[in-house]
Each structure stands twice: as structure tokens, then as C-alpha cells.
Length: 116
Image 1 (spheres, rainbow, N blue to C red):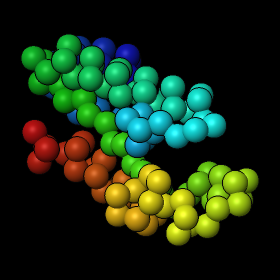
Image 2 (image 1 turned 135 degrees about the horizontal axis):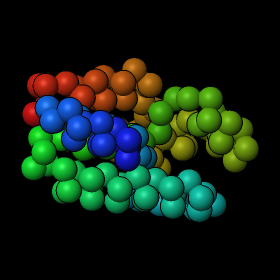
Image 3 (image 1 turned 135 degrees about the vertical axis):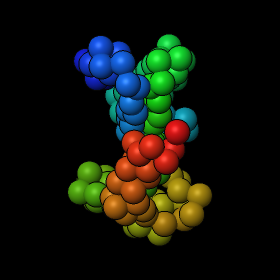
Image 4 (image 1 turned 180 degrees about the horizontal axis):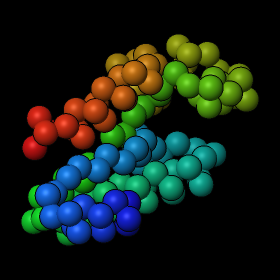
């Protein structure tokens, strides 16, 4: 992000940065200290970058997915012995796993001029 911001400032036309955080950046989960700390860092970094660069017409946002159906999540389920039905409500208010395409669409919209 440091280099993205430098380039956007140099070009002088603004821009959009979309970081990927996690619901764990707002609501920590047990036994996952490094991941939770990293995602809290992404949230804080995004907020500071947005605050410092908004006057340059640079938008900085983050997407904070809940339970997304990925190999990482499936591996965690295997390790903990939980089912999707047991685990999804812990990370999703919708009570289901999201799909990677949903995160891609949200990110694409935030990166677009439509989100200005």
C-alpha cells in the first residue's frame, strides 16, 4: 500500500485501494492470535491511510469477510471437527458461508468510480 499511495500521489489523479481484512479484525476468534492481530492491523492501517489521503482524492477501504468457503476455512473445519452448520453462525450474521465471488464483487465495486 505504501507504494500504491506513492504512485497515486505522483500521478495526481487520485485512486482507490481495497484491502482485505476479516470479521476477525472486529470480532476476534479464540486460538487464532496471529491471524486476529494481522487483521486488526489491516483495519487500523486502512483507517489511517483513508484519513491521510482522502484530500488527495484517494479512497482507501477494506472488505471484512466472515466465513468464506475457501480451502483455508475447510481446513480449519477439519482441524476443529466442526460442521459448516456449526461454524458459519460464529462468523456470519447470515448463518452461511459466503462465496469468494461475493468478496470479489464487493472489492470490484469499491475499486470502481461508482463508489466515489
